[in-house]
Length: 182
Image (cartoon, rainbow, N blue to C red; front, side, top):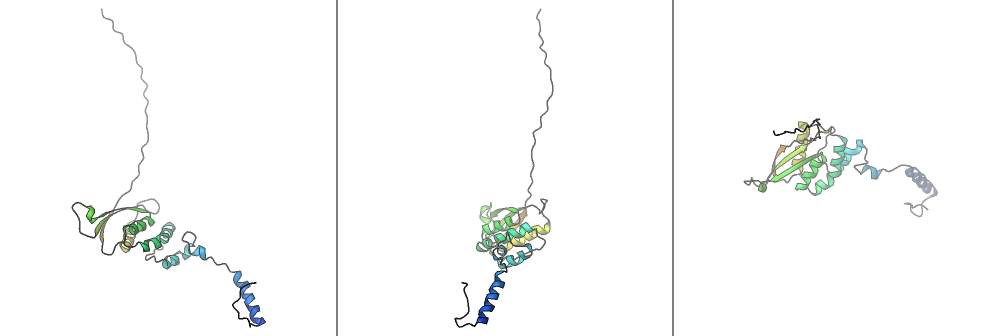
C-alpha cells in the first residue's frame, strides 16, 4: 500500500485523484543527482549550479573543462577563502601553476601582508594563454586571496624541450706501421 497524505475520512473521489496523481508523478524522472554533480550536469545547467555553489565569476567563453573544474572546486575554495590553498586551487582550476613568495620570505623583507605570485598558464588549446585569460585568472585570485594582502603578479613561462640521442659512425681503418732500425 502506498502512503497517503489524505485524512482517514477522505472521499472515494479524493482517493482516485490521489492515485492518478501518483501514477503521473511516478512517470516523471527526477535527475537531482545528475544536476548537482559538476561532472554529470548538462552544460546548459552548469551556470546555475555554479551560482548555487557560490561561484562569483563566470564567463561563457571559458572551455567546458575549466567551467567544470571551477564548479568542482567551489565549495573547497569557499571554505578556505583567504588562504594560500584557496589561491592555489583557484589557479589549478584554470589549468595553471603558481609559485608564491610572501613578504617575510624575501631578502630584504618586503612590505607586510604582500606577496609575489608567479603565474604559469598554458592556453586552452596548449598554446600560450591570452592576455584576457590571464587577467581573468588574476581577478579570480584577487577574489580568494586574504583581504588584507596585496600581491604582484608575474607571468611565468613554461617550456618543454626534449633531447634526442644522435649517433654518428665514421669508418676508419688502422694500419700498423713497423719501423725497422738499421
